[in-house]
Length: 472
Image (tube, rainbow, N blue to C red; front, side, top):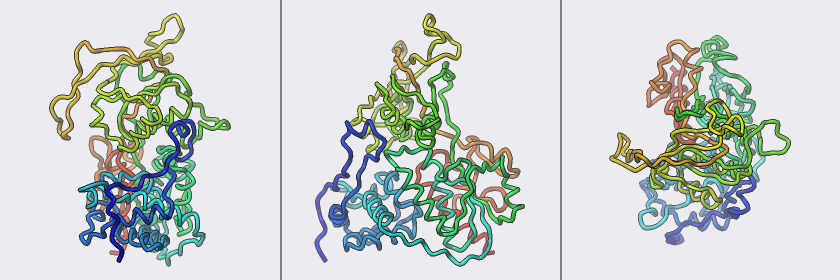
């Protein structure tokens, strides 16, 4: 057995030049070559206690797939990953490995952890580019399960149940399957062809996908049971945007990040042949500091903004976005206005009255400087406004990226389904079972906006519980 590569630094990810990529929607990260992947794989120590597996929400056998890459058996590596993950090419790109599997990697104690996500992406991309055989369809029992929503939770649950032989139908409200993977994450981070490939793999396994089906409007959950479905999994995500509640949020030029990104990602408003309008050019302010805020800011740049500012009320150390996304945003020219909070958005209806309170066009924001006080209930230092520090920031577009909540539609049309005060469906953590017989739920519709991989983990938990429920 060859000695492990003890280089303390992981192999860098090749990427487009920042000055070039800031003006196109092509994928930023270019992926490892086979040679680089093998070199990175040899940094893995193959720990017997496998802390990385415990750190993965879907418990991929990480040392096993990395060993296959060390051996040069790349397809076998993909097969190991796909035993536990229905979306390996997606997860290799957008999972926050640095706070999950890589966070507990032993190599991270005296250097950088193994590039687990980069290796997962490599194996998945190689499989998708070279393997044309369709997956084997499991022998069916004929028992029907409905999946509400085709985001990561729904697709994962559908894939696991299809492998167990269930007749699975996915109902998606939008015209394209993929949920947040297609409407929320930009093309330059997650190409939509990759999402479609993952969806096509599930269809080849026998999963039926029905788009333009708004459960709660087109059909109710109770009607799904009447149609012969014996269990329902709700993975409809969290698509209800949150706002600040400050004056001026109804001015033209104020977007929720959900709307802004959906117009660009799903409706392709950045293309010349798109019929979906979007604000382009000028000065853009993005309120928030998470991954969605970074996506919105970087998208605005690519749409031609002259200036993009991230406005965040805490310090840079508290930014919740992935470090990689923050660094990419900085490299591309996004400005960070930290310890800053908007208190008013103002605009005009005519050039003679540029602060007309009516519903005119945005011209700027009134902001106040902040300082950090004592930690709050989450352990984060609470931002406190500094009296007398107000100032004006000129801007033509404001994008509010403060998080999302579950849409109340399913709750309002389904009797016996309990939700919490934020609208999340209440479930048994170990099973995903709701208060309504035969109905399971998982992902953002339960937790509020979270990560792709955590939603996938919830989909896996629910698939196992549905199988046990229907096997009684």
